[in-house]
Each structure stands twice: as structure tokens, then as C-alpha cells.
View 1 (cartoon, rainbow, N blue to C red):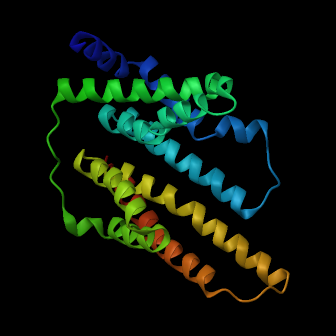
View 2: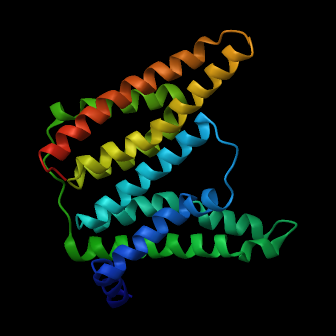
View 3: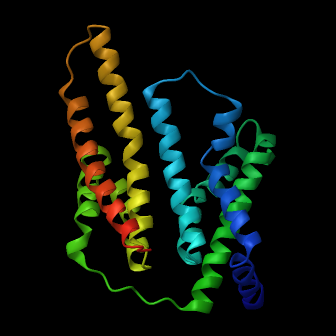
Length: 234
């Protein structure tokens, strides 16, 4: 088993390993589904597309910068529900659906990402990067905004991914991941506000509040990203 994991780890550092990461990032994030089944265009749809693109880029960027543990760790996080979906579908009224192409590829991707991450951890034995907490204001703002949107449990899980990216030495990936998770609710709230205004629906303070906190957090994240890219940080 150890040799197998190390061989997967070695493969993940190759060009073919990068190709696999690109395919899995786009596949699980529904790029192919969106292209083949374009829904009615709206701000929510545009927000979904942009969110997908940003998170996929975060994964691919980590892989290109040889942050194999980080890229595959995020892939595992994204695919982590594949096993539950497979088992639930298998014991449903239509068990044959458990073996459709999407479910099987998702299950394979989850196992592959986990195996590579474990192999990378065994070989590289990564040490936590030195963190300048003063430079993490944008990420802390993201955590605060996400907490107001989705509560403690979801924020804790997503926050672990962001923290993992920072500790593995890639602030850019942490910022990209955070941005991807805020773009969707920002565009959705803006879409609902415009819809309500054009149809004379009652004023909803909550929608303006969501738009304000997501926009504020995204502004700081984008500014931090520009600075990080300018300094050629990881």
C-alpha cells in the first residue's frame, strides 16, 4: 500500500497529473454540465459560472505551483460527498442510477484525491508555513461574512480549507477559494434585489445586508489578491 501511494504521489507531480487535476476540477464543478445545458441567463447564473471558474482556478493554481497536497486536499473536500451519494442512490428506488458515469467518476475522484494527498503527506512531510496574521485581514473578513450567511457549521468546514491553504504556504489559493464561496451569494442577492424592485415586491433588508457584507469582503479579497500576485507570492 505504501508503494502504491508513493507511486500515485509521484504521478501527481507529472504533467499528466496536472491534466487529471484540471479535468477533475472542471468535472466536479459542473463546467461540462453548464456548457451542455445552458439555463436561462440571469445574474445568479453568471455568479455561479464565475464562482465555478474561481474555485477551479484555485485548485489548478495550487497544482501548477507544486502544492500537490493542497490541490488534492481541496479536490477531496469537493468530492467528499461522492461516497454518501453513491450509497444513498444504491439503496434507493433506482439503484441502477448509482452506477451512472457522473457518480462513478466522482467516487473515483474522491478516492484518487485522498490517496494522492496521503501519499504526498507521507513523502513530503510538510511543515506549517510561517504565518503573518496581520496580512490575513481579508480572510478574517471572509470568515465573518460567511458566518453571517451560513452559520457556524458551514463556516467551520470552509474555514478549515482556507486555514489549510494558509498553513501549506499558499495565501493566493486561500483568497481564491474564499472569493469563490462569496461570489455566488453576492450575485444571487443582487439578482433577487433587482427582481423585487422591477416587480414592486416588498423591500427586503436581508438581501441588501447579504449584498453589502459579501461585496465588502470581496473587495478586500480582490485587493489582497492583486497585491499577492504583484509580489509573486504563492
